Image 1 (tube, helix red, strand yellow):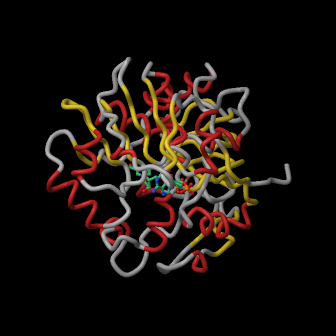
Image 2 (cartoon, rainbow, N blue to C red):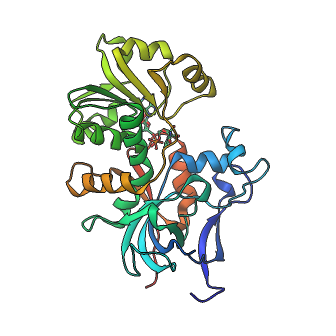
Image 3 (cartoon, rainbow, N blue to C red):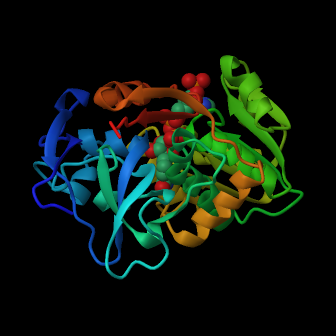
Length: 327
Ligand SMILES: NC(=O)c1ccc[n+]([C@@H]2O[C@H](COP(=O)([O-])OP(=O)(O)OC[C@H]3O[C@@H](n4cnc5c(N)ncnc54)[C@H](OP(=O)(O)O)[C@@H]3O)[C@@H](O)[C@H]2O)c1
């Protein structure tokens, strides 16, 4: 790799609204020994991007710098073509099409090129587009790890997914179905058909009905919204039921779940990318058991608009960024 080669990337040097995102020329990275250099063809946006960009909640500053961002780059999910490999890389070679996600302290896929540890990526399912593949990793890890690790999902269970129409929820519905469970998806009126179409056995329109007041009990609740109280969850859970909360709408909700949830109701651990889970998800994709739902694709230069849209909180599936190259 020629030193001094430039590329375009999204860079932010102060916290704030999407207005702080600059579409800028920077140095193209060089892969370390265990890394691949990926020519990014598509990336997807996650709430983590705007939480870090805004440093909201304030706790985000502990992760990425008190006054200004230590890592000035955003973007976890990536799909693209391997351009070069580090000297210790054994699993990939230049020309391979891959997908995966960066750890939260090393974001940087909103760029023409990004380096990733070879353990963080896998070969892209051949039949998927780069946009589809980029839509998957972090949201699917969150759904899988929430349902399986925190939720202890088992076949035959009644599972409720709150926020079934969002980036994480659309994967949670499909992954829960793949475990052989009976799935109820909670979403608003305009998303009922979409949530049914990805496999939910039942849907509840949250604008018409409160899922905690129906008398129905669930063995597992996976909450990708985090807008309910601990007593709401208790009311909707079967006696041995588990509730895994992936997100939260306010710090008071977060602290209530942490302090009062007990063993059965709690926050899932922050989702972590790893090769084993990526390959597990890849199998589901190749078997057609999980199909990414893409709401919108934005051109790379309009990444700020993509984040602005995601922050509104009404995405129907995933928001994807397409990175075009001249070659
Ligand atoms: N723990 C982790 O490691 C981890 C990882 C990734 C994400 N997360 C968190 O998980 C949460 C979900 O992420 P995401 O990517 O799915 O976000 P997202 O795509 O922005 O979620 C938007 C979706 O939420 C739905 N929604 C909003 N209010 C709702 C309500 N009251 N009831 C049911 N659905 C509602 C919206 O539908 P309508 O427009 O129809 O309301 C929309 O489809 C976020 O809080 C995120 O920070 C956590």
